[in-house]
Length: 192
Image 1 (cartoon, rainbow, N blue to C red):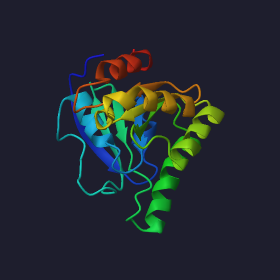
Image 2 (cartoon, rainbow, N blue to C red):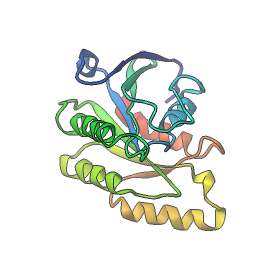
Image 3 (cartoon, rainbow, N blue to C red):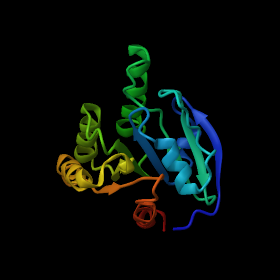
Image 4 (cartoon, rainbow, N blue to C red):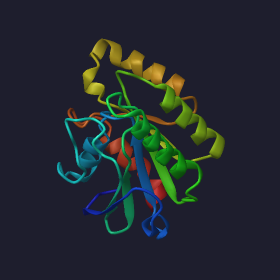
């Protein structure tokens, strides 16, 4: 799949017509500061499409980007950032759970992004359980593999794969250009 065009359509904070317009959705979720927006920008080759911030927890809405005039990349707020209020963290967590369990959006692939150095967090594990129990199409991205020294990278990725059970895992780094082709190829069956 080649991404020829990408544009921001709208941001939402709850249910909205765009969720149900029939276009396929590739949803990106993960904890704050895991690199969701940077990964999206890398895929579309536009550094400023998805908002990135040096302040984790900045995104507070679900952003929809129309790709190739056919499907959406959906950028979710990051969860779990300790310096945001407990109420806000809980609201973001509920927003993600609502999308996964209750939104009735079926035409989707959920990409869960984890920090390759940190590994699977408790909420990541809870989300993986939902994917498996609800048969939600998903991929796991072990992001920022450039932060791992070469001598421990393979071992850490193996541990992540074991922790993810039968979920497909792709090692990724926009900084050193690892995983982009594998990820875009993984999208092909859903978007053809």
